[in-house]
Image: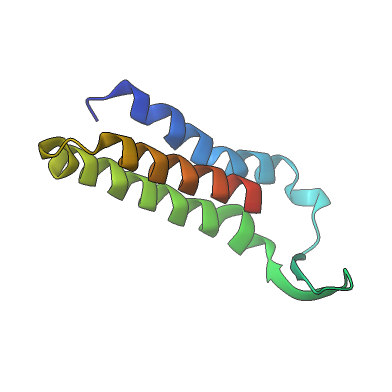
Length: 97
């Protein structure tokens, strides 16, 4: 990664893992992930999925976008769109968790 700006989003993508590991013993085995219109929980997920696997998937997606940017987008002039997509995925991941 030649671009040092790529490290900040990568670190932010991994923050939920560190935060989750700090709170690991205080979290229940299953966490609510979806609420119906009445505010009742109607879907749960295992904390391993939410704390470890989901951020790793987001990190891999971010790494893919970095590689995509350096190989393909670098040839075009549409860096602004790539930046918007990268930060949208990053922020979406952290908002959802």
